[in-house]
Picture 1 (cartoon, one colour):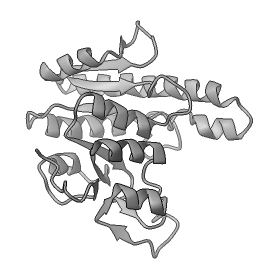
Picture 2 (cartoon, rainbow, N blue to C red; picture 1 turned 60 degrees about the vertical axis):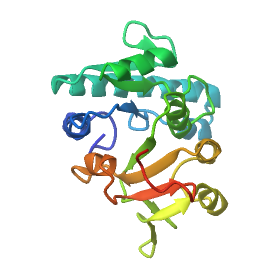
Picture 3 (cartoon, rainbow, N blue to C red; picture 1 turned 120 degrees about the vertical axis):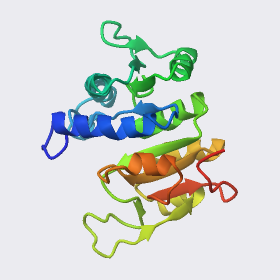
Picture 4 (cartoon, rainbow, N blue to C red; picture 1 turned 135 degrees about the horizontal axis):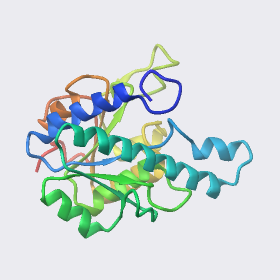
Length: 228
């Protein structure tokens, strides 16, 4: 939504497309999971009395809208992009099939995973880790509006301390609000390296992929590099 209070910012779409393209031009395979909070937040709606499952399905539709918008922006930069949706919506997106996703990546297409896991009660964070595991990703990059993981909310707490590296278990034990606990647990069970960084830092996606010391790494103590 960029600087807008809600909705889709065309300026942010253009910025995102250029940032992703800079990484794509390195020759790496890229898959993207987009949330839908700029349009509709399922958990927020559920807290105001809407049935949680209904609210979550509406949130999934919001992610499809964002995914299609991002696909359009990416293709305008010349990058072939496919949207794969966990819910059936054939007129706008391909159904999510793991082998199809891997094949698109092998053909140097960017893949956008839409509609979360396709089931209510699971967040975009969990969907991101799940899809990363399914396609055997080397690293999951979580783009946020802050520089990485802090011991408290840096937006509301001036004394919040930045954390450069941390283990999955410590994130769980301290209940740090970086990703939901289900997502962190799934990443920990499979040893998926996480790198949390600020999306608004121009060039950050490319720098993280190139191994620069950007943001916060969440990892098993024996795995400190983002490359194999």
